[in-house]
Length: 393
Image (tube, rainbow, N blue to C red; front, top):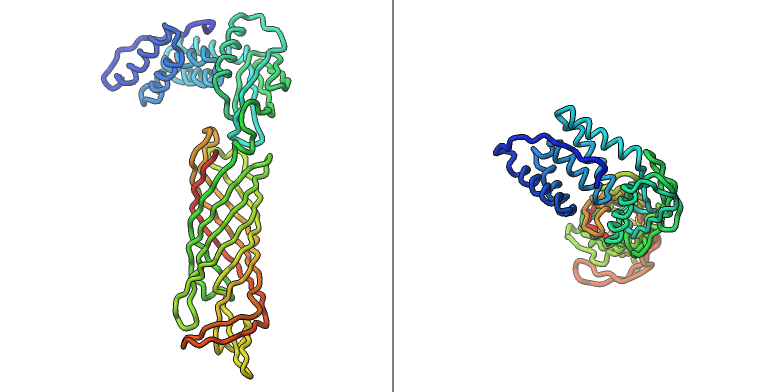
């Protein structure tokens, strides 16, 4: 048990408080029987109630219950809320004593990993000596809690002041202080598998510039897979972007063979959870249909080039390289072991490549003609905006 009990003043129950008071009464019943997980559940319901959030007694009891569950971080937060909402001197005094007890007997280790959202089992071994039996009991309860399930990093771990070995790494915990530990992962999937993220994007794309005036905005889709290695996030991706365009005659055509595949590398901006902001650069290779070339007919042959007089027009596919910069913003709560997220990607790119050197085309009257291309190069800037749905594993 906590080394001292927190008294609270009994207040008359009014109708508006009936719901949260019932949670509080049920929690007291569970505490008397030592059913602390059940008591915590009831107290969390009580303190999220508009009236219960202002009740110092509810917060004080939650602090006691969390201490019994070896959740020092949660206990300290609840005790602080109890102090803020205390309305009498005795309640204030006892809450201050509880906070002083936490500050003088315990310290914190901030357990971190290379990527937020990693999970690990924790093995905590005391290397120094504890003489206080209550602190020894706290460590015993902590061992039981940690044995039940892994923790998601980063995680603040409250421990009695002393020297410990956590997942094989020694760390000194000073009472009232904070330490930081790059935590080895034990008994869970490798970090790369834990933080694997599948992203599906749908939006629109635009080709810009003088070589793209005949293109109209098109649907763009993207499927990508991301995995971090330390602070760097790698990705592989496949894009499909059917490309509608207007021909010289005013007809609408659609190039269905527009696709590309590539890679990207970026990093996530720190300390933004539950939002994830990721700037990246990348390179795609693919095919861009519908590149417009005017052609001139002379001496029975047809030659096409960007500066040709334009007696005829052909629309050719270009094999293109597409370097790009990307900024992605997602809502993705990494403290959940897996889950869906959603966000937005804005991608600026520069496409450059070449069209075929020759070919056969069909004119508006249905007759075919052979042509050659004297200047095969093509380049154009582009912009894509994608609404993105992500699934973290």
